[in-house]
Length: 321
Image (cartoon, rainbow, N blue to C red; front, side, top):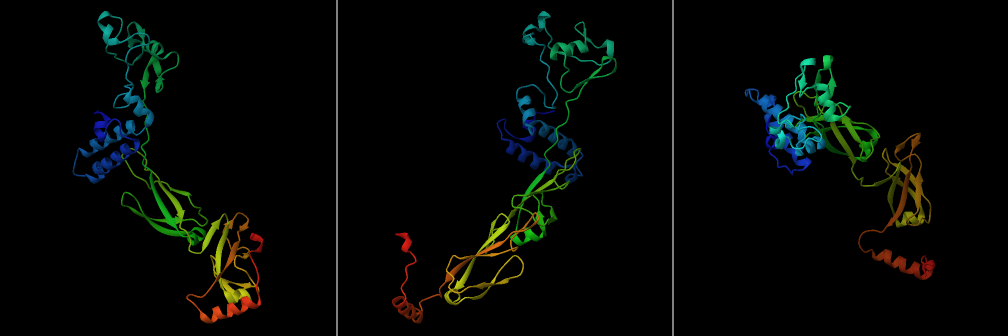
């Protein structure tokens, strides 16, 4: 097999993200399903998968870069411990330039010792990782397989109301595929939803999963604090002075709140059970009054306030020094 860096078209110093991106681009281009009239597409796709199995795994990539495994992920044998450089001493009989391993019991001799002895001399009494003893002294090396990263990640934004009640939304995947996704009621910001088998596909591998990270859009009225909601409630000057009933929005239908006479701006009213669902109940809604004056200049209001100021002075900032 060719050098995996050459197969994926990346430099040896390429980042993990660059390798992943190169693999996905080439895999999509050479996938057999997209090249049904090209008999060589399956071979190219298999080569891409093999290259990605090496470079897509950090540990395997380091082993390949150090020359410990070949382009197929198989161990490279470079002589025995304490033997020095086999190229330097191959002609003197002190080492071996080429190692030929045969399986099959008593006939599997190498330099006068059995295959099991060779393994023990190389790796100690513990058999090398991936090597397993078979009948009659036979050993088979299994380099194992590395699962491809076929998962897809997408982000989805829902409204506060949708996060509470649940919603079905359509999402477009990086592959161009579109899916209808049911977002469950009570989903929290940052929560991840996994859809099994909806990720990318590759020959010989199970399909990946789709990972949806949910965010909740800021609400025009409500501020979320745990399971409670906070709301700035605008009221008129005369509602603050005279009192009255005002409509307060909630996540359900609006409710009426009684504003007492002489209510100052900043007064907080608690509406029990009008917040967000929580284990064992529901949070509350806290409405903070904000006195709003009419737009523009009102000469009549100004004249009234001047008379009232002269007749009824008071000092709300007296404790501020």
